[in-house]
Image (cartoon, rainbow, N blue to C red; front, side, top):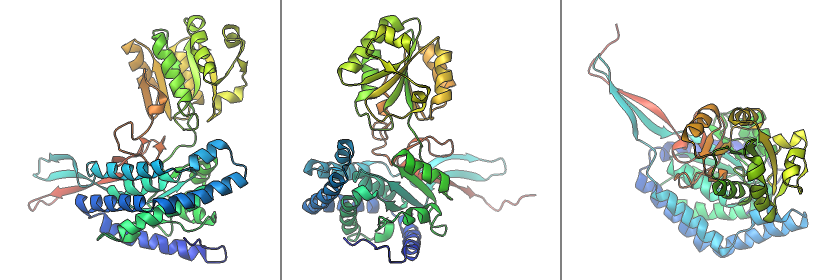
Length: 426
């Protein structure tokens, strides 16, 4: 592995990457499902074959992270084990099993003038993925893009650079054994932040869409500077609303899982809302369970009265993505106040309602416009794999094209094919 040094012409090298991606796309977008699946299996095989090398490169990232005194949570995200290698390879093979999203007839109809029209799914083109920390994203993103017929340009975070590049080299070895262009998947060979800026400008119109996957600072930069469309979300301020018709056991189990299963992911709940009519009965049980597994509770005097261990809450807490074992708690008058709170402080990511009243649930679904809304289920199901997509590149809270988990189908667009028999327009 050889990294580009800062003395080299980053702009020229990034321009070549963009050009090569466009050329590779022209071949990849017409590849058969068998060709793409064969490539994915070869990629998975090479990752397993190079396990020792990948683990040794991962050790470099871990050593650097420790020298920088990065948190244990960050080091955990960076770490790859031999089981992790097998899981990465398995994930690639699972993607190969999914139906080809390209070339499907989405709709078809006939016009009175005899024209027959079809709406056909096609790849988007060249996708730039900018991500942080987790080396496995290299394989997930590359595989999803290849299966959906898109060329990809990957830019890993500097903290996971050596691990990501080792995985990429294995992917490249697999691609080299196929009839596909090996530049169908490329990883930016530098930690230089200027490379990110060039990607956000589109590499001379080579990149069709950018997908950021990382923390608030990364996503904010991407959304502010990108000159091409972006699939992504800035923050995941997710809510669990316990309605007065909730089952107490479901309320406890769902809330605890939504907050504590993994606190560092974007689908983790940050705020608990509960109806005034039940809070005295329900909150002590819910908060006791949360506290028993290490969660800090933040709320006002009303919350502290029923749960004395409650810490003081400030206005800024409602708009804070903790990504930690902390939850904000608020008593609301009714469902409408809960919805108003979500509309004011939510980020359009994921919300859950706990209720046994189906009409109440439907009202909540209709009034809340977040990309994912759940009934009696944890917000941590906000994941492409859990939706049956096989894997995901990320979550999008935008309202154009892809929304929610970005899997294979979300990485396609469409075109119209029109069949005539000599028709002319008067």
